[in-house]
Length: 511
Length: 127
Ligand SMILES: Cc1cc2nc3c(=O)[nH]c(=O)nc-3n(C[C@H](O)[C@H](O)[C@H](O)COP(=O)(O)OP(=O)(O)OC[C@H]3O[C@@H](n4cnc5c(N)ncnc54)[C@H](O)[C@@H]3O)c2cc1C
Image (cartoon, rainbow over all chains, first blue to last red; front, side, top):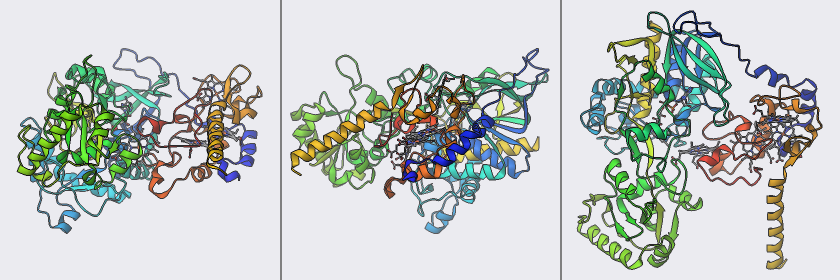
């Protein structure tokens, strides 16, 4: 039963005899980087590449592929984590684009102008409409890049909140890795160098103020207190910062929005700490919309990250009630915009001021129509009850008040008017709350940073002292700020990241 | 077997498993290590994983692959069809590319990285 043990005894002996050649060869050989004399010039270079990309999410991967396709000989991606893909590898795999093959098939009339207009509306007057239109015009091309690399999508479109037509594709695995894995394979095929456990630290300029390289740390081990050794990397055509958002940097986010303390979790992996963005500010980039940080009111207090409850709640909120356990009463319109709901949830506290997550109650009959319910129950992050009494007992809710609330709410379902919080009741039509019930406990989580460094439509980073692009410096993806304004529509980050990454690569290859 | 006896047997297996999970971390001469790797704690084989006999650094990311075969491992931890992407050695997000050390601790206990976001059950995992 060697196979089951998962190792090969004979091969082991052979290799042990050879002294683990593989291990020695790949151990990081940190060459001692000489001090950068005079800060800006006479840098001793340890490595040189044509195109240097920091971060391996959608933005970095799309840029690397585009640079290779345009003839770049050496392209490198530095990633600080052990694995590649960042937020992108755990995202929901929802990708919006206008004028696609599926829209043609389903007879949907759409245009880049229409997609950009939908997004501008959610941006409430402060979105960068030029960038939105630029991305919408090339979103289909980016989608095609993923399909050519082997990404597979469901054969139908979805219409997400704020979109005026169905235009959203979703990977068949319903996870962003359905895109990052094929893009990574494509990168390998094209000869892009992918280096993990390497952290970008700072930019290196020549004496004319052009970015000519980056200082990185090789052998950086996230979470193990190993910072690695500094290495100077020359970038012949430029450096692209594609380091993602800062949702997991509690200091930075709560400085922008004091409600986003450590008490509020995040849907992002722990690497979303934003030090790449801070280095951009260090060298003079313009901060834009930093306080516009999106929290997800559909997240759960009982699981880490995005989890199962998020998709469960997104689907069920329309025909459910959320109650404050202390009173058994509703406290919000369950389908108000994300910010309104998250603020209301954060008010739900016990007598000592500690979080007392609200309980969202759904009829089993309605909850079971979405596949996530099974997983919510299987993994113990949601509960099923046969009676109101059991439910109230488990969640410590005053049962009389709760019964009263349910009865009132069912009256609103009947009338089609929510007299308590003005929730639009169209989607709750005929969906009375009745036993058996399924419950989850919601608590908001930081999800997406609309803010970041100001870039132009060419993905060039703008200098706050000259208001001109900083030569040789590009930024794309969530690290760039201002495109979406107050609120980003669902499925619009993937096209943003990919198109701006491609744009950055094209401009580097022109330089 | 009576119900009671069966339950007792189940309980024994359960205890055996939890004990085993803890017991794999053993004190060897000067350093803790895994009982299943006991052969390499004979005082001169630290370089089975490390790049030197007197290690100062972490092992390379592919050090474990000199003995363990990835394809065999993938087979050993295969899961039912609806949970295919939960195979830690060939998973939904990162395929086969997660360094072993991100999930398996050698000289100290370690929680596997999927635990940060999921609560999948892995019966054979030895923390
Ligand atoms: C759970 C979840 C679901 C989502 N679902 C969707 C969806 O369905 N559709 C959609 O459009 N958007 C969605 N989003 C948003 C979208 O996924 C992100 O905005 C997007 O992935 C960001 O991509 P990126 O390339 O900018 O950065 P990331 O994918 O985050 O990649 C950045 C990489 O840079 C690395 N890095 C950071 N700092 C450094 C440094 N100093 N040195 C070296 N490397 C560094 C990070 O480790 C990371 O790997 C979702 C987000 C989350 C969290």
